[in-house]
Image 1 (cartoon, rainbow, N blue to C red):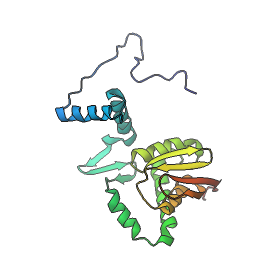
Image 2 (image 1 turned 45 degrees about the horizontal axis):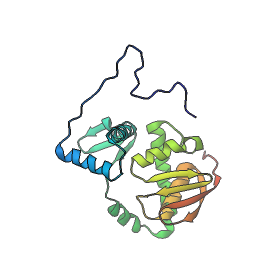
Image 3 (image 1 turned 45 degrees about the vertical axis):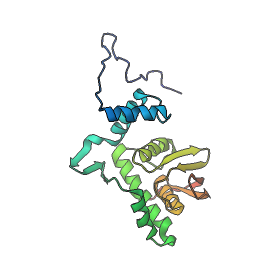
Image 4 (image 1 turned 180 degrees about the horizontal axis):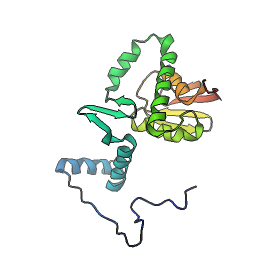
Length: 195
């Protein structure tokens, strides 16, 4: 249910305050690219595209550049990494350690999310915000359906790493239902908070 006091960002706060318009000048190739996205049905229009871009900008705190080529999100340094290269790295880890490594990654993500956006990732009421953050950072598309956690377009191919990562991040025990994308995990039980 929506908050009755919530306003759309383009609605003026005061009656005497006018809505301001901005003109964005795009190169011909940029206009053609956006038009092709709209024609292919990948974007409903220019306004939703700009809104999505601004949402990502706000979510990622893009203004937090330290030095050219270095970006930090809270305490974590962010890097654009080719997925294939990352999967080559994970393939070098013995399979029997994938779950353990995933849990360590989940614990690190939990600290990063806590310090960056100030929420406790293990509290289920915060999971939508956690999933949005992970999506913006390129981890994949996360969905919660009843007691099932779905992960579409994961950036890591190995299901056991994801299972460990989600268990570490969300403080839950999971059972794998589908081990190929879309990955599906059943939430079996919540883990007690660590002391």
